[in-house]
Structures are given as structure tokens and as C-alpha cells.
Length: 350
Ligand code: NAI
Ligand code: MG
Image (cartoon, rainbow, N blue to C red; front, top):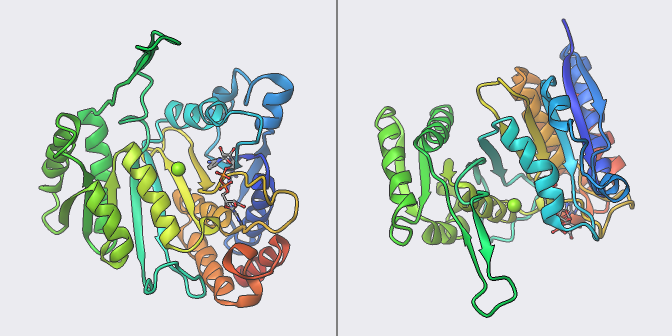
């Protein structure tokens, strides 16, 4: 079997530490399932930006194009503005490779304490539109420095964009508990979100077996906290999905375990897999970062590459190590090091 090619971008801070862990777990599970992956490492990061003036080389996107998937740690470092690290690397990759789905599963695992009193059994997925909506480059600033200084930023919602994200969410719901919640705000945002609602309703009509509910984003945020068990698949625009998925990660107990996938479901271009957390400068270099978010992201990568059994083995191993107090990191109230958790995960997948 020819190896599937993985581009690895550890990035900054704890990015490298959690990616090392994910690689160790991948190595173990790939041996067990006879999967062949080949890795190429890229040093694209804020450190590179400081030395060379760019997060990645000018031909960076073309270099990545030939890979089957991209595994990313985290980028961002004090001294480099966050919009530089985001717009210099992550957003160009998402857009050039038409990764129009941002997928964020949320699960409250045994042994992980949610800040909610009762969150047992929470298990849902946020499907965020990832390439248009509120995160557009259309707009500008005028009259800088004058009292009438102003900024305008346009949202862009297209029929193609809403259709494909709705279809992805509906198809995902069909494989799960068959409930889809669509985040909206069509009472206040009178052009784009009524259009979103219309297209979601049209696409939903093709899936009579799926129960589809539309909820305003403000009420939905409250329900994430008050009754998170009612959700199965939640579909949302770029900005709404960004905020809801961090809220959901908070409900699940720690940002350190939350994974994400930026997917081109057509598989024409490489998809990118990364933990939700950032580079955590406050704990970087101490060997205490929770590697589970990166490891779970690696499992999502295996699933996307056509290895669902190997992916499921990793998630089972994660659940087992999270359930044991001595294999939890500090963010989960434990005292295990990144290395100890990694070793336990590797043992569990073997
Ligand atoms: P952060 O996620 O790096 O850290 C927030 C808090 O959570 C910190 O106290 C940190 O120690 C803790 N934390 C995060 N991941 C953890 C893990 N795996 N194990 C244990 N504790 C963990 O977010 P912050 O501090 O807002 O951002 C730091 C830098 O990371 C910034 O430059 C930011 O732009 C960047 N960032 C990058 C992201 C990406 O690459 N996708 C996402 C979010 C932030
Ligand atoms: Mg975010």
C-alpha cells in the first residue's frame, strides 16, 4: 500500500509538545491496523515570522497541495499580533483548500469534570461554516484618525455555501441521533440569516427522517449551558459556529481535550486537523500540556483518510485514560505530564 502523505505543522508553544504526542499515538495505532502514513515536518510558525517576516513561504500553499492531510499544533506567540498568525497561515490554508466544514465534536468523558452540575452523556457535534459568512475580506476603514473614522465589514452568504454546509450537517445527523439544530438570528439580521434559514429548510426537506429545529443564537447559547444533552448536530455560520464551539468546549470541561477538523468533504484538497486550543505560552516548555485535543484531532484525520476502526481505537484509548485520575493532566485536575498521558494512550491502543 502506498503511504498517505501527512504535512505536520507543529507551530508555536505547546503545539510541538502535543503534536509529538499525537505522532506517538498514530505510530502505535498504524502498526496495529497496518496503515502506512509518511510525514513531512514544516517549521511554519511565529518563530519563522520573527526570523523571516512570514509565517510560511510564498509557495507554502502549493507545497501543501500534494499532501493527503495536514496535522497542525497551534500558532500564535506574544509579540506577533494574533491576526498575523491567523491570516498568515490558518485562514489561507482553510480557504485555498476549500475546507468549508469546521467540525468540532463535544463529549463529556467519564472523569472529566464539566463546570455544569449535570452534564453526563453530553455528546454532540458543531458543524461550522468555515470559508464565508461574517469572516469576509470585504469592507474597509475610512477617515482614519478623524472623529468620523469608520469601519465597514460585509458578511457574505451564498446559496452554494449554505447548501453544502447544510447538506454536510444533515448527512452527519443521519449517521447519528437524527437531530439537527440550525443557529440563526433572522429576527435581528434581516438579510443574510433569513436566507440561511430558507436554504437550510430547503435542504432539510430532502431528509424527512431528520428532525430539524432552527434556534436564535442567543437562546441557543443559553440552552448549551442549561440543557446540552438535547443536541446532536448543530450547524452554524462562521462566527456563530466559532463562538458556539468554544462555549461547547467549555461545557465539556477543558479546552485541552477539544479537537477540530477543517474539511474539504470532496477530498479534492487536503483537509487540516488541529486541537481547538492555542499555543498556551503560559505552560509551554514545561511538559504539562494536555495532549488529548491533538490526539483526538489525529483520530479525526484517520477517520477522514478512510481508517475508521483505527480512529475508534484512539477514542476508546482516550476515554480509558481520561477515566483514570493518574493519567489526567493539570487542566483536568490531575498531575500527569504530557509524556505520562502519551505513554498511557500508546499502551491503551496497543
Ligand atoms: P490558549 O488555548 O493557548 O490558552 C488558554 C488557556 O488554556 C491557557 O491558560 C492555557 O494554559 C490553557 N490550555 C490551552 N491548551 C491547553 C492544553 N492542551 N493543556 C492544558 N492547558 C491548556 O489560548 P490563548 O492563551 O488565548 O492564546 C495563546 C496563543 O495561541 C495566542 O497567540 C492565540 O492567538 C493562539 N491561538 C491559536 C489557535 C490556533 O492555532 N488554532 C487557537 C487559539 C489561540
Ligand atoms: Mg475560536
